[in-house]
Image (cartoon, rainbow, N blue to C red; front, side):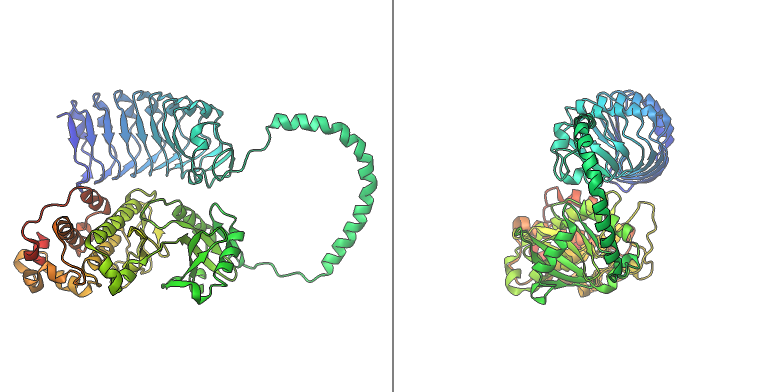
Length: 592
């Protein structure tokens, strides 16, 4: 056996050490499963192995030091696990590595300088760990490196000057660290987006959103020397004027003390906090208040349990959506620092099917979240409007569902740490002018660390929340999967499917021998939205397949529901052909 590929199969348990005896293995891909435990050190005996892919599991412990024995290894992907400890310096002996991805783990302390010995390395991702100290200057030796991501760590100090030699570098992300000083004078940094450089202590240079650096220190020294003569000349004159300023200053201070002072803020919630990223927050706050005329109801475009949404046209003619939070919500924000950090994480999300979040403002008078404005409004608004529903044909509906799948798959499987939305409804899915879906409203979102139990108060919208929340109160990604199933059926039937779900998923309904009457006798065509003509050809195949997926997502057992990543991969393939004529397909056929 030379190749072992069993990715995306819900495989659980530990990686067997006996795998190290399969010495002819060239490739191992066990990614996107439920594997736990440590990586067996026995894998170090696979001398022919060139690709080891174990990402998206629940592996724990340290990387075995025997990894150095894999001299032919070219691809090592251990991302999105629970690995801990130090990144072993022995990785520097895997001289043929082309890709090294250790992101989304819990590695701590410094990046080993031995990583700089991997002279063939083209892709390095160490993001979303707990790495500290300075970036080692040896990384500048990686002259074949094309992609570098060290974001979301706690790296400090300056970016090494040796980075100027990394001319092959095309993509870089150093955001969310404690770096400072000038960025390297190479194309990758000059062309980097603001999102890839933001949230550091004070980096500067010629790149989007950064301040220009000050003059070099030696230039300042020369300038100081040239000014010495001038200082000696004007010093006596300044001395004579000093007494005049002292007298005026003393009078000014006495007058100021006589004035009645305003009381200082007594607690965290009285402070004005502007976290509108990439903008002058205070100025933008004033612009929004002015654009909505102090949140006049004429600008209101929606309302929810957490706040009221307004449309605001900025002086630059950019349109944004502003969710003004109810005072009851802002009073709950006792830890503004933690909330501000969460806003930074959410504002960094970039996906075509997720509404961009620009930031948050907390003021004594108004507190609000600022989002990208999406033109057509909510999916629910489209479905409940007779006129708009007729325009919302089957291909558009299928495309909307695909967009929601892409967004949730990204949140659950590509964000670090994973993000659970917790309130997926037709009201929180917005459509643009091209009927492209955009998932919105992170008002109830909380970040979920991979091994956190995440017990919390009940959240969500009645009719969309997973049934297990009624008794466990434990929020997982599978709660979003259930809500997605409800929304998908709503899109297909043109109304909230609560009664239909109850009838289809009554006890025993997943078994063909005890299927409820509605599943045995009702036809699919009769429960679809009757306001538009029945789907044909490819659209018909898509509707049947999507309804099957929706029912799988609504399974009463959370563990039996598919992951959003699995659904996403499923929808990249061609629609399966219909098993029989569309008009004869019953609801019971959807369970097969």
